[in-house]
Length: 320
Image 1: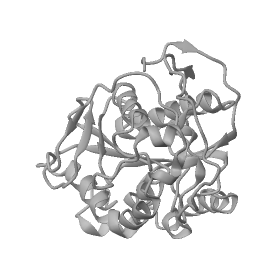
Image 2: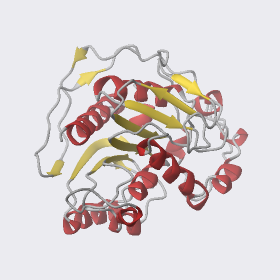
Image 3: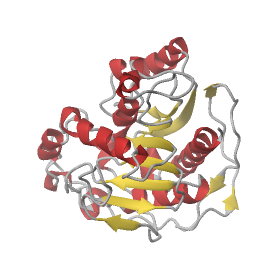
Image 4: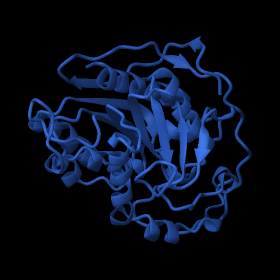
């Protein structure tokens, strides 16, 4: 996947910005080099999906290109137990990218990480938070859902199971042993969407002495979430006012419902959180990772979402 060349006009979407510095604009591009999808064949009988998993999560589209980062074995980052894909070389700024159901090896996720590293000037980490469980891309691309052990996935990767190691990885990035990064952002799509809200929780302020302004210890300095799954109202209500929040919301999303979208929009205002809420009309859950050129408007939404996340991270991780 080449790093963006052709400029394209993209329909505008409703965007609400509430922050202390104002919205950073950036040019919108169409990414070249996206390959044609593998042919699909839907089974006549599809399995019943576990709670919290949308059919959209299981519809894939593989991009062309070769990831440029490095896959490191478990425990390579001190203080963590996860294998991790690492890309970028900035010693001060890091981004933790929390993958979706397709897992940490899915090419699209790693190509996105490469874009974030190059365009947001950061070292990007994509840890394996599913303990080696990976949905084979060919099963997803060909919609052979019955061959994917979704019940196992739902059980082994429940929020309460994975939250401790997600917290631990973020803590490690700011520790002297784990990298000593001054600023850490977190980006989460689908499954990763709830996790970045939890990383931004106010409860983490009690875990350290805080900064000179008394803002408390933060695990991360800014978050971006796209079509989040498993997110609750309590997650939104618990966000620290000192962690800026960006929400990328497709119009059609059975996981991130209209009620939850409204709750997010109103609650973040009440909390005084610097935030940006961007609405993407006409597209569906999983669009920001899938980027399927066969679906009208989805590739453009994917690129817009990527550009928005890059601008957000540049603003909050490099802006002070």
